[in-house]
Amino acid sequence: MGVKLQSNRLYFIDAMRAWAILMMLQGHFIDSLLDPIFRDESNIIFSVWKYFRGITAPVFFTVSGFIFTYLLIKVPTVGFENPRVKKGIKRGLQLLAIGYLLRLNILGLFQGHIYSSFYLVDVLHCIGLSILAIIGLYLVSANKKTFVFPLLLVTITMVLFLFEPLYKSYSFSFLPNGIANYFTKANGSVFTIIPWLGYATAGSTLALLFKKFKNARNLYPTAITLAIVLGLTLIFYSSPFFEWLYIATDISLFKLILDNNYLFIRLGDVFTVFAVFMLIRSVLTNKTVLKIGGSTLTIYVIHFIVLYGSFTGLGLYKFFHHQLSAAAAIPAAILFMIVCVIASLQYVKYEAEIKAQLNTGLVFIREQLLFGYETAVPVFKEITVRIRLVIQRIFKLARN
Image (cartoon, rainbow, N blue to C red; front, top):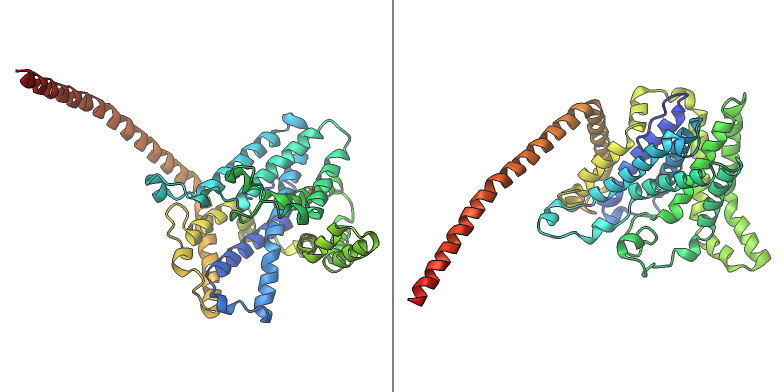
């Protein structure tokens, strides 16, 4: 999120990021504030909205893995000598820190409380860990055959997707909640690193393919065709395939996958979205669209603060949770997207100045704290001396 391609820019990827973040904004807004009475599965508008909302996160994770890996392997040096490794580690840790920071309630902290919601895992945590995981796989395979890295990526995607019915029921109660929340939704986590890492590694695999064939004459026609075929196959035929496997082998795992085959179907959706954006790539060079695609982290942070009330708990969610009608929610969601995007672009525009002002403010606070400490110490000592003298006089009077 927020990483920019420096050269040979793949504009359709930035456009996909812009589309995904806007879908996430309206999806979170409507899901949080729409009155349940309007959540009618038989309503074609609601059912279409719900389906497309389900595409957003898989696209986001896949694109994040794609972008990071594409930048990582563009550098000719390998292993720890690759500067993208250090940048990636910093980025992954930064996303983890921001993820926790957004769930921190400062008012509660002043009262000595850290609420359990602080330890819940969300998109940023998982993307941060996914970046760190991809770096780990890259380093492990750095000095090995070229097929090792993509093989590891594909294997992780397949293992996480195939065995999801088995591990999703585990509560991981043997782990502290703060760690268990990365693996289970039992405590309220929105996302978990398993299986969502699988989409990031799928994106990494696509990045390797793009890098390998980037100079191919028919790259895009071939990529579009393959993405459409693979996408539609996963969407419409993955379930019948697992049904056939279950009948042929009587292995219960295939039946469990068939009962809730959302991971492979959503992967098919991702490939289809890739195909659509590659197909219209020639019109996806609008500067505003590219700026939105390059500012996804900032937009995400702003939307989280406004909607969920990070730091204060005073967000739209607190005041309008499941209270809006459909007629109110739709235009409000559009306005919400516009406000978050404009605020983000303004922040990016004046980012250097804002950071300079923040640094100045932090320096001032530190100096005041130090000054206050230096002033308070002598006063405290004087008060201590006076109290001691009073106590001594009391004991002296008592003896007399």
